[in-house]
Image (cartoon, rainbow, N blue to C red; front, side):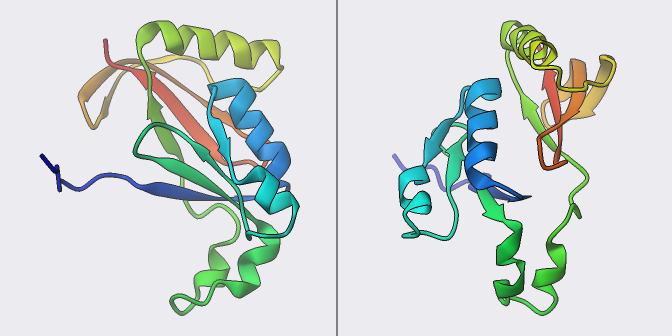
Length: 142
């Protein structure tokens, strides 16, 4: 059976160094890198990392901004026009990720409680930035 409900396919993140960014996401969130070898060889314009079976983050180098012509003004999106991306994890993974980020000296926000999201009220959440300044919220509902 095919499920044709709307799903998040990918998020494009502007990054300074796609290879270093892919390494960050692999080490901190356990994401799988995609197309790194092809990117390094110049065969593709950007690599990606896999969040889950259905969703990837494209790691778009800032140098590509001038080529963004899909809609008027698209090149101006280089920077950080998105406030943040939120990732929902199981409670154990939430704690493991926070500890891993602390070990890597990644600055973290305080933990907040009972914030509203796609699945209702999340029990806990916190924020951090990736090496390019993209802001992520991590939360758990259980």
